[in-house]
Length: 420
Image (cartoon, rainbow, N blue to C red; front, side, top):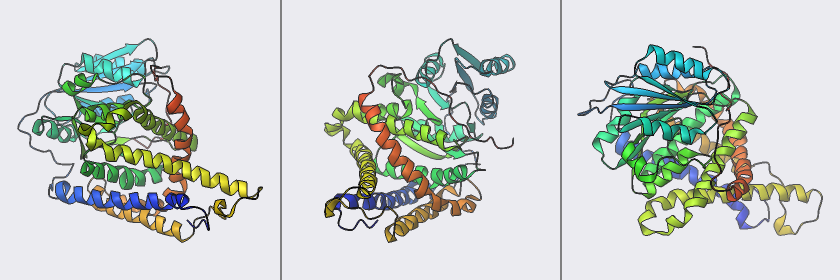
């Protein structure tokens, strides 16, 4: 982006996303050729495990009456020998409780827990874990559909790695009829999947996917389970597990289909919560990062700090551009335009390159992914702006939020449901 004579700090607004884009591409390719490519198994195939220990599925629900039956049906169809399903109805105001009770009456391996007051997802997960009969837990959102072989792929890591504390799956977007839905298909492939692969090369994953993840109960017990006062309990538990030297792995074959917001207000609220959750975790655990034994978290935490700084630089550039329309500014502070020139073309090319690289990886897990390639050009225009804005708004909310304040449910935007 050409800012004329503005200081070098504003050039960071351009070079940071460009640098990170190519860092993610290179690190993800290392992951792919080192681990993923040589394993020719498709997610449609069932891996052979020497041991298949029983599993407890935990499904916290709040106002998921339209979705929870499909979710539990997908769990009942798992190609796995022994499991139980624990569904938590967190004081839903719709018919979630009645739907879950009906399922429980017809399925002997389904148990339902009802909360009389809104306790939050963290409490739902914690209660599910404490009442689970088995050592391994697979946690799923109330709108997610798990592929029949996903549990086997998740468990493959636990039975082969005694220090594996959690495994994060591969969520794929179900609703893709609107522009936002189609762009999110591209985002989950070219950004989220790419970043998780890259972070495995760093040595630590920023977060498990809250919508689909598996845990070793011993590891959770070691760190005190999920905290109840964090906006994003998935980011928080991921950091605490890794700061206590439990490994978190990414399994792209553990495919799970999810519903995502398809309205700007729903997308804004979701990304604001994600941004606030990351900053809350950094605020709470930053002192631990100074320890040498936490060194494998340094790159992930530094990336979070840099992205936060980048968002505020972008905000400063916008404010200076607006101020320059009404006030005389020093030459070094003048921003002649916020419309991207050749720099924008290069960033757009980088986004398309990211998606092209992702096609070689995620095309194995989602057929005909390439037909969404065109929609990737809209990603910088919408998501980078939202990312910068939500980070700026989330920063004071995270820094000044009172510790101990319970994080409770709010009904998210599930978008337009695709045909069954």
